[in-house]
Length: 212
Image (cartoon, rainbow, N blue to C red; front, side):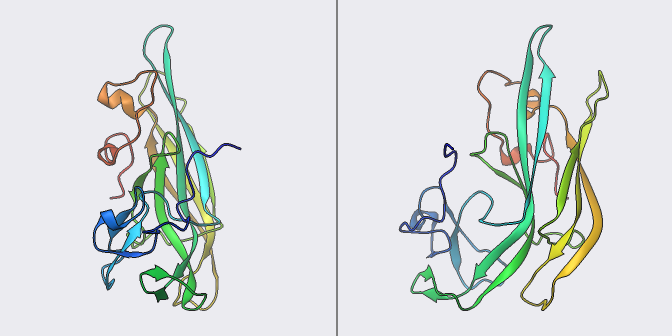
């Protein structure tokens, strides 16, 4: 195994989850943010998906013909939902202790085309319809329509929920889908080349699906 992204939960000064005033208080690429509208202060947040379990990972293969003998290919990795452990106890400026923690289901979605730079497609707890979940299943169906700019479709099936105000597990049997453009984002920016360009937030609504 070769590491592509370091463990962002390593014990450094300005650890993920530590309280902060500005992003300079955080370690590495972490950002200082309010994690909810009623939060009492900011904490360091990694600009990628948070540590979690029982999420789904799906890969979309995108390609475009650049000429008679040239095809540009990119793989897009999608991460949806899962469970995380929320710790509310602080020792000075650091999260600590085993008390005051709970299992929380997530409903956010992330995408990357290099496994290093991640774009958040849907913020956590932003949907009033799609229920936060883990232990669900996902499937990507590719559109093979020739000579046409098509859309692949990402499906989500069932799963289970967990939240601090729910004392028992609720199992889900719903199905959801979202349409994904099938051409690489570089085609929209006219910069397809031998080096893959990392996805950016401004790609949402252009070559990445919008959460709205």
